[in-house]
Structures are given as structure tokens and as C-alpha cells.
Length: 236
Image (cartoon, rainbow, N blue to C red; front, side):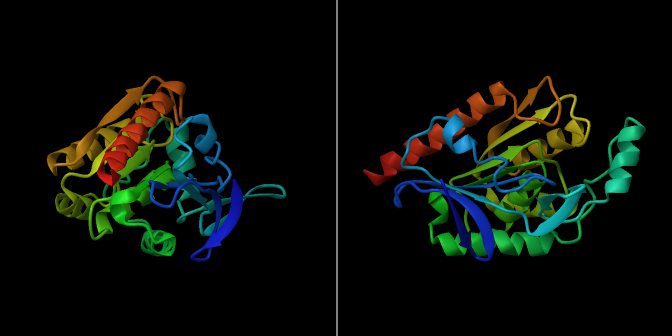
């Protein structure tokens, strides 16, 4: 595991074999590049896999002397008000400010890695999952896979239209049924939209909140192993 800079982004990088798959994993709001980096070890996947965990492009003050990172701003006051009311913010019709800039940064990272898209898995947690969806919808071809962990549906009109162009995309999605931050119903709606568009995958709902429980990690591992086997067979 090493710290590198690619396309202007600080990244935790776990190198593998250049001809194997490359995974870009995006953290959630307020975290940083170290947050999900342990997955490279904990999932116990083949050592030829290449991992990239970039830092979000915005710096946040999340406590006295404590900073975090984000990919685009969120209305924290509206979020806190919704939580206090036991409800969810309606995000499905919103295109957040800064989303385009964040997507362009990830597109630049993909170009800097210089990996064919059919060897790339893109994914993330929470805000990182939203950005992964947005980026995948703008790629010129399907990636090897897409990982959506506790994300949500944004910009429904555009995402619904764009999803059809990425028919056949393989994905893994998870969401907690008691998630206090992001509406499980919106996650189901996203799953239905991409399924209808011809994407191939599943939504794993679990008893829990805004988190990555063991059962999700097990299914995530299986998803990556399946993509790895496909790529290995193709390379023979």
C-alpha cells in the first residue's frame, strides 16, 4: 500500500499486475482516501488486482482540528433537519452542485491510470456510490463492473435516460433497510431504473443502517471474484 498522486488526486494505491483488473473505490462524505483502503486486504482477493482509493476534492472541517473530504457539497442543515424529523431528504430530482466537477476528476483519474474500461471496476460508498453511478453513465463504454454501496438516486430524469446507453453493465448494490441518512426506497428505485435499462446485477438489502456489514462484504467479494474470473478467462 502506497500514497501516490494521479490526475491531481491523492490516492492510496495497492499495486497488482498491470494486465489484471483495476478498482477505483470512492469514499463517502466526510471520510478520506484511507477510509475504505482496508478493503484491499480484508476482502482477501487475488494479489494481482490493482486498487485506487482517491481523496475527495473538497476539504471539510468535521470537528475541532479534524478534517475530512467530500466529492461535492451537501446541504448539511437540511440533512440534519430531515434526520430530526425521522424523514429523508428528497434527492431523486436533484442534480447537486459540484457533481459535474467531481465526475470530471474521476474521468481524469481513469485516463491517468491508462486502463481499458473493460478491465476497470468503479465503485464507492454513500456519496462515492452516487459519483460512481454518475461517472459510469458518462463513460464511452461499459466498465467491467460497478459497485454501489449505500448510495442513492440523483437527477432521476437524466440518469434514467442515460442508463439505457450502458445496457449490460454489471453491478452490485447494497443498502441498509434502516439507513438513517439515505432513503432505502430511493435505492430500490435506482435499482429498478438500471434493471429496466438492461443492467445486470442485484440490490442486497440488509438489516442495518448506513454501513458495510459482513454480509455485504461477502457478496461484494463474490462480485469482484466473478469479474476477475471473467477477465482471467478473456486473457488466456
